[in-house]
Image (cartoon, rainbow over all chains, first blue to last red; front, side):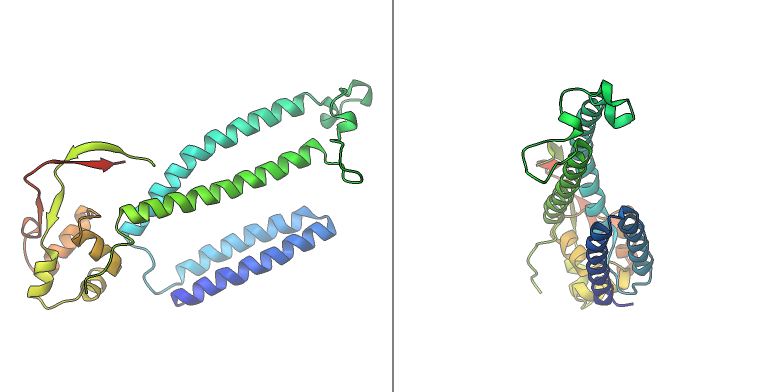
Length: 161
Length: 82
């Protein structure tokens, strides 16, 4: 498989996953997108092994390695800080763990954040949104570090030939 | 951005000279030793220090000893490292 064919395939898988995501939202079945995402990722890994063009050598592997390491160094701190805070908030709302309604705390009322008419957002759901935001942050961080190391290891050097 | 300054002896190389002697382009050399042309360019410009394995492959491709192609700079200088 040629390198460009592989990139085209990755794009197609991303579009299909996006469609499955919205179908999953519509059908209120998160398991569909969870399974599809895993299958998509495995398909990309398998397709990558079939690429005959050279797309990675030791320098690009080093750039990837350094960018991934730096991203993880930043991300685990942010993610753990948020997650610990989220766990404490959940422990503060015993109704979320099956405690009887009489033990529910006054905040948030009935486990619901109020303010948007017709759109009550449970704390668990808001944590999900924030975690998704953090994952997007991780992607941006990775791209930023990757560009930094690519530049450092000569990716944007001008050619004399 | 990440990185600390450290005094190192940067590696110099004569890949460009040997390429000229063998009438090879960066692309030719890259294909022969199994790396991308950008890697050859980065090594020539001193932006990337190759692994020992790659350094040996380059030297052997030109039929010379590794120290003929790669040498340490005599003048130490302060560079940014990770």
